[in-house]
Length: 332
Ligand SMILES: Nc1nc2c(c(=O)[nH]1)N[C@H]1C(S)=C(S)[C@@H](COP(=O)(O)O)O[C@H]1N2
Ligand SMILES: [Mo]
Image 1 (spheres, rainbow, N blue to C red):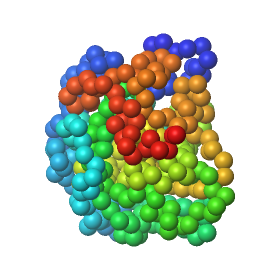
Image 2 (cartoon, helix red, strand yellow):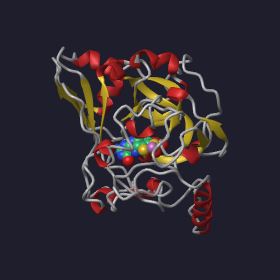
Image 3 (cartoon, helix red, strand yellow):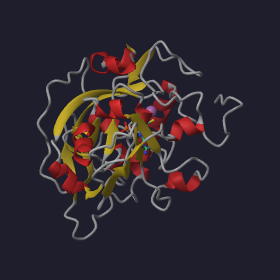
């Protein structure tokens, strides 16, 4: 693998997955009986028991495109009504493929192993803090938050900076609805998102002690208030499985996937552009805005095309991932 000189040697960086390598790996995993695609009743997925009294359960879930086994939060809001304003130009990605092909560096840099390595990660109970430059700071329990927010389902494209793509139904609420509740002060210019720091539950954090954990991301206030900006607690009509960022994550579909921070613990209103995980690690490859742009190649690869993770269908990358009508106004 080619790692440029200025790269810290210990971090592989985000990089496109050569399709051949991906396919070989899948065959290898299938040989071990750990089918990377399909197959209910896999031994490790959702194997842990729910903590007593949490009211959660381990169960088989019939999603839009297949069955996935996982731990679920107690919640009766799924599936939420679909907001038909957000249309796809391609089929919904196979749920089982999306659930076994993840970027979640807290656990591993191996996309097809994340779903197994999240086993020890405890996502219940989960409290989220919303503070900084706001009139009404709050710390809320996830279930409380879900019940207070206008939950809906949206079909969105997702484009990773590494060139893979998917199209999935998220369940969640607009970030703007939450910000209106806490009332940002006039001095707030940006929103900072902070994920968790638990090396004892996350083997990737335990092994990589030099990356700037916890994972952090940021948006301008205008981006945060844009109607596309979603806080997701579910996917495919049920609560987020851990590998997708349980129990609560950001979704900004016009930006590269690394902006969509998983497993958020804190949302903070600030008066400066916050430092972010990838921009801190490799600033010349991952800028703060990270808007999907086919005409702006990554220093190590083209961004002109993308490939769907289930069909491997190759498509032209769309400017702002096809969301220009929603966001062009943000960027003059
Ligand atoms: N906390 C955290 N959030 C994260 C990441 C991560 O490593 N840690 N990876 C990002 C990247 S690069 C992508 S493409 C998406 C992948 O989301 P998915 O695995 O649910 O498809 O999550 C993003 N959010
Ligand atoms: Mo990504």
